[in-house]
Structures are given as C-alpha cells and as structure tokens.
Image (spheres, rainbow, N blue to C red):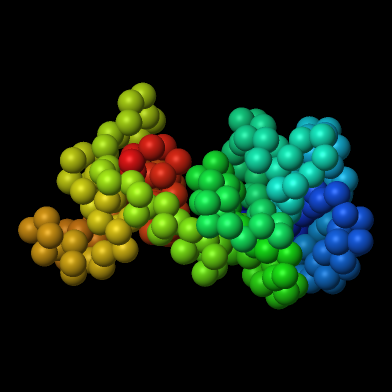
Length: 223
C-alpha cells in the first residue's frame, strides 16, 4: 500500500452505516479536521459497493451489521478489487473473534462506536501513514488468534518466499518476543536479527512489525 497522508493532500473518506444519525455525527466530527474530505456516505452494503465503484475513497469507515450486504461480505468484495483502500471497521461489536476475523480478512483498523472523534481521526491518519492502527482491542484479539496458531510454514503459491530462518523469526515476532529474546532462541546476534527483520518488512512492503505479522496471518504463514 503506497498511499500516504501529507500536509498537501486531503484524505478522501467515505462512510457506510445504516444509521443516518450516526453517519451525520461522524461527518460533523471529521469534516472540520485537517486533511479530511468527506467523499460520500452509503446506507447499506449494496449502496456501498455501487458508490465505491464510481468514486473510490482513500479510506472507508464501515459498520459490520448492514442491510443487503453486511460488512463481512463487503470487506471480502472490496479486497478483491481494491487492495489500496484503507478500511476501518467502526461497529458496536467488540468480540475478540470478530475483531481477529476482520483484521485477518483485510481491515486496517477496528474501532467500536464508543470511540471518541479524536481516536477515529488518529486511526485514519495512522492507517494512511502506517497501514494499520492497533488499539488495545485489536492487540488483544490478534494475540489471542496467534495463540491458537502453533507453527509457521511456507505457503505455496505465495508471491513472497521466506527462508526457514525468516519464518522462525516471524513466529517469534508473532509470539511478541523481543530482538534479544529471539537472538538467544535462534543463536544469531541482535544486529543480525534486526537486519533480517528489516529485510522481511521490505519484502512485503510492511512499515511496522505489526504490518509484517498481519502479512503473515493473511497469507497463512502463521498457522
């Protein structure tokens, strides 16, 4: 993903939610913020898919529970056609399984509707600049999901091939191990670990360790 927010660019934001009052509140909260341009709103999943094909946003705020096409199916459809659109799930559901599922399917962030406007704005900027926004909800859900994945293996066909050593490092990163801990586990210097980790990020186009781990989850490298 290459789109970034800069001081000279406006982030084109769309919102899909079946509650007009909520849409109006979000538009009011974000319209006055620097670098934000509200592009359009959709009242259900079908309306969302129609509008996104006509005018593509940089970032989409989307509920899960919507008529016609729900947020889960909409996310799948969008990711098949538009890999570069940042998607922030904005919903009432705070279930860890749902959060992990949506992040693994391609969401860039997951917020509940109780989030204040400052956090939503911060999530938008972070997703545009760093690909993902991780709050406590997402961190807990992703770690919980990773606890049920026992091994890391190469998945074919896969556009990016990792060496066995890189896959070992990916597994330990997913287990939240530090550079020093990984160094002791696989008998490489911390500097070597950092170099390999940076090379892995470059391979997949990830800007952060979180992005690298999400790549591993989405491409079934972590199982």
